[in-house]
Length: 89
Image (cartoon, rainbow, N blue to C red; front, side):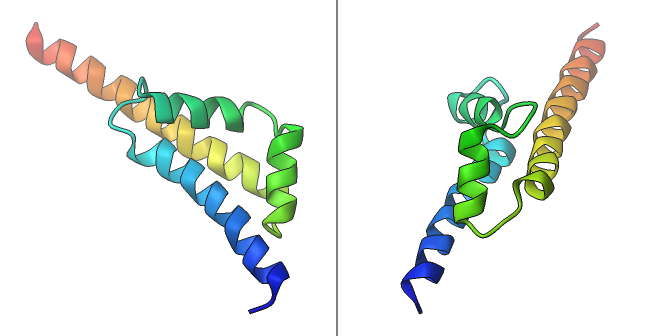
């Protein structure tokens, strides 16, 4: 495996970790989720673009998909909290 491919794999792992933190944190209030959510942001930052480029990916393609995962997680947690409140009433 060439050095370039190994480097891309490393940066792809960074993006995978962000996805993991967004999906598998115990709560959206957990620090890992908050840090990942903030790093992804509403628009791809220069850092996000750089990581995608180094990973061999297009930031404008990757960003909305990762952002969507975070939004889905937030909506899910809000719905669960509402359901718990209704059940408690």
